Image 1: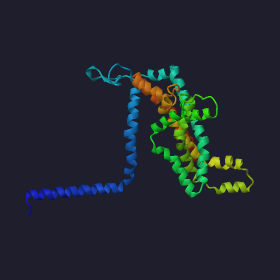
Image 2: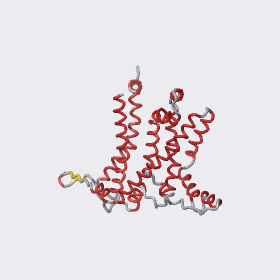
Image 3: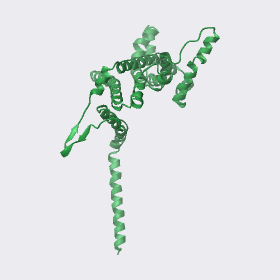
Image 4: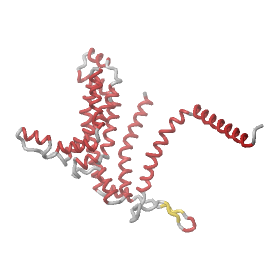
Length: 318
């Protein structure tokens, strides 16, 4: 006969065994749900929670305290809850020409940079896909290789290349011409953005082109279609998903870019990332800065949602 202590230990061991069995059974029966739950929890913690925190600040009012904004919810006497929402921050963005012009300039620079990346990246992706097996891997390695170096270090390298006494102007002087001003101009910003984000255009295009049925090009050629006609009627329509994916991967981060305009533009090229930095750090106006960030998010997210809606409608009709 077991003693009371031994009986308690046996009961605890039996309870742990049953709990472990139930937990294992739950994992086996709900493993798909758990796998889907992990990314949702990740997005909730690292995206949605910060987003709603910034959204809350954007509806607050600037205050000379720490943190420098008022509370949205305050408790008055007798347990009365007061909610104070200020929309003047968003109205201020529309009324001040600085923010409107900065938004438009950011979209313009990002759009032109995306088009340049597409014009450069599309032929490169096409050439990589049409290369032999060994050359293809070498070219892909060369595309990915810059990611092994610090982004900031690469931008500083371009500052040396584009400087008045830099490599490009040294070559221009060697040919007997007058040097040109490149650094701290909008041209330098375009060069930096295109160089930095070009791989984000090439890789989605390559992944899309790798799945194409190239026998369609041969069929079009056999039917008498010229290479130009084949490209615009066969190749390009089939690569539209890759074009859209690459364009979004370039346009979205380029719109909010801060480091490249600040270093290569020298403060002469004003983009929305610089305005955000000034509002948060120089002016310490967190509510206006948060409104700028939310407005930028809407500018970027709404076109994506519209495109996905159109894609869904097209899929339903097909």
